[in-house]
Length: 415
Ligand code: GAL
Image 1 (cartoon, rainbow, N blue to C red):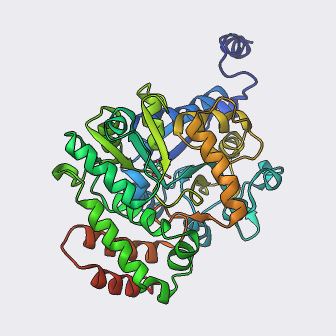
Image 2: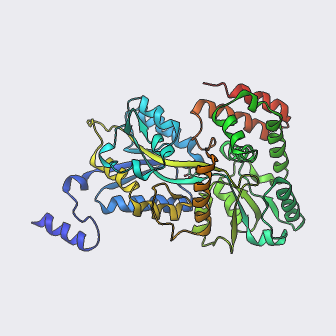
Image 3: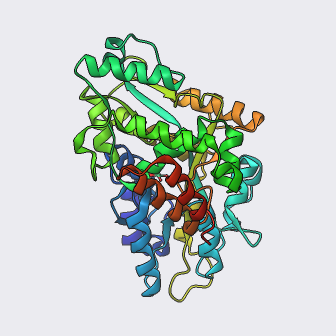
């Protein structure tokens, strides 16, 4: 009686309605790297939803954009027999973890997922014919964010080609504005580099970074890619070394810098700072990439828990919540992404998200929808890591473009 009375009171207060004692006792440990302002707000939606369902949320956040540090922490946890309930894993890494035999299938809550996911993304969520991962949202990587006041000072026209981009950057410089905000970390360097690869066309990108075609990797066009990156570097500030991506975004938000190359999680920072697209900042496709779309789909996988063979109620509730239309909407509104679930209304989203959605549809039809290398969607870890090393070396030395291209072709062979 007493227990029921307490549950009744909690329910009246809007908490833990219809929660069984067993659920109330389960705590779900969740490993992720969403620690910036916008990211925390987005993952907070999941935490709140799970708490309302009676689960205890144990946050295992490992700071570091793009998750390199989180992945190291995860390996240690799994090896020591303390795998979290769920972890943020994406792309080919999902299959890797599944092949270790440490994941649990979540098919029982995924009955309607197939018809509600784009086929290329539904496929990634599977291993051995079972759903083992739940997708959050779609991030577009090939964005350029521009401070509106800085753009106005530089003539007001959004650059759509590299010559136009350099003209805008020069005008910003002349107006005393740092043209580009950049964080010097390997994944940020790789993000910029893949943007420039994409600006040579989606077919070139696919041949180079999905097929790892040697002819494409060693082509004159690829030499030109490195030349363009070198030129872009001329507009960075001296303080870029080690700078986190969200601090670079803050420079654009505050008008200390004019532009940033970054995926649309940056939009979560603008939103969190109360900035409006169109009025305070402009989102544009990276010059030359208007018709293409590098996708980055975040997802959670679920680890077998001690003494359990199948997914626990908490793990199933997590997966189900992540794919629910309400969560998909609220999460992406905070995260800067768009829902991955098909058919979720875009009515509450801003112009940038609406553009992302429209461009995604166009790119899917035209063959311009390509997986991001820098964000773990295009290649297994080994090859992606080796390519990343080549780009990092190039961007932190005076290496010439031809030598970088030779190193690139070698790195692509890493298995
Ligand atoms: C990406 C991830 C995004 C975003 C970003 C910066 O790899 O997919 O969700 O958080 O890293 O941390």
